[in-house]
Length: 369
Image (cartoon, rainbow, N blue to C red; front, side, top):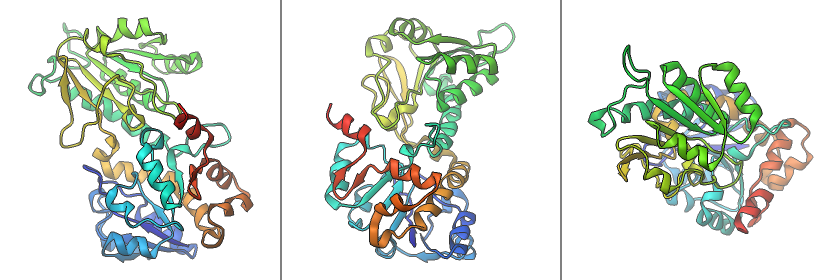
């Protein structure tokens, strides 16, 4: 299989989909791996590192897309990538299609096969390729929110965790999934007062056992309002797999929050869970609306590109290997139907677009709304 790893071009993006060690495993298995020049430089991997692993360095994105059939990326293709995509390509990356109908239409028009990382689910229904970045984003959300609370950043001047004789600051986490759990862990470790809300009682019970000092709540609109208007930092970590994030924090509530308080919406990749929130970037981390600081960076884990690349690469490698071992050049993604492994079955279920059509049932339901 000819596998291509292009350089990521989204603003602030420094991750690379596969590390040199992962590439070596693919090369040792008999596959050809093409890496665009400087693709790993912002994650601390040089072109020489990739050459030593047996990969072939390619100067331009256009040449890389021409050479490869299986395209492995971190983030969804942008306009500069899309012009090089072909109908025989298989693209394997984070795509977040439910929040990007124009991209769905474009990929359908091209006629390629698209498999989103975030749609790959194991036998238990967990999301092994989304989880690594959710862990990173959950932790970053607390660090970022804590820094935005500094007075010189426009915040309330609150130190999360406080000191003797001072309020420890309040953090509200909306959602107790992977990102939410990691946000709770970091906020609790700082010593902040933590409230977490979710619709699933068993998730809340698990968090309470791990962090006895936190407060857990079954989520209701009234309780969200009560807690958020008092909070110093609100973290949106709501996920419905394959769907747009539900809006759980209304503008009417945001307007009641204290001036200088902070919202960090991790769910922005899927449209955001805060009403009216708009994406921010690594260059412009936040904006102020109704006196409240809003931060919603879609590629938040890119801020720690090396850590993120390493954990992502480890997670996706078995699935890339499974794809590479199929005869995609003849059968395309249909080749997965004949493979017998948990990874192949998970990949087959995760296919979102094939032969110009949306084939994922959840995505179809989202489009019909």
